[in-house]
Image (cartoon, rainbow, N blue to C red; front, top):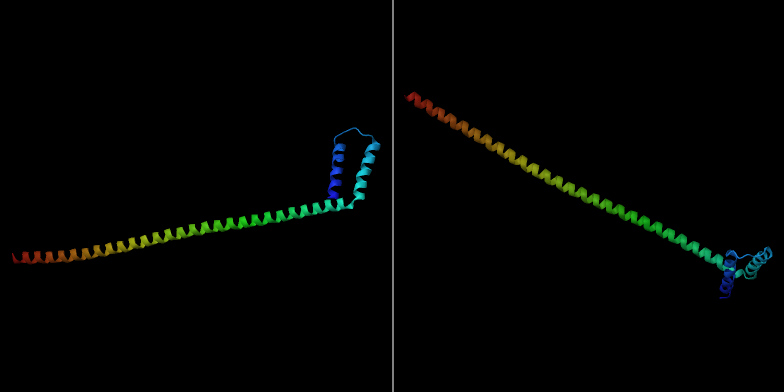
Amino acid sequence: GKAKKKATVASPRGEGRAGGESQGDDDSQSQLINDTMIMDDDPEIDRELFDQLQNSLKVQYRLTQIRRQQETQLETLLQQHRDQLKKQADEEEAKASAAVDEVMQQLEAKEKELEDVKEKNQKDQDKLLKKINKKLQEFSQKE
C-alpha cells in the first residue's frame, strides 16, 4: 500500500509539469531531484513498476502465442473443411460417373439385344423368303 501511495503522489506533479505552467529552471531542477529522490528513497516503486512491466510483457507474449495457436487451429480446421468438401465432391462425381457408366452399359446391353433381335428377325425373314420362293417354284413347276 505504501508504494502505491507514493506512486500516486508522484503522478500529479508529473502532470503539473506537463501542463505547461511556467516554472523557473531552479524549480524544474528541484522537481527532477525530488522525483529522483522518491525513486532512490523507495526502490520498491522501481521494483513494482519493473515487475508490472515484466508481467504485462509476459501476458502480451502469452496472448500472442494463444492467438497464433488459434490462427493455426482455424487454418487447420478450414483446410480439413476444404478437404472434406473436395472429398464429398469427388465422391459425388465418382457416384455420378459410376451411374453414367452403369446407364451406358445398360444402353449397350440393350443395343446388343436389339441387334440380336434384328439379326434373328432377318434370319427368320430370309428363311421365310426361301420357303416362299421354294413354294412359288414348286407352284410354277406344277403349271
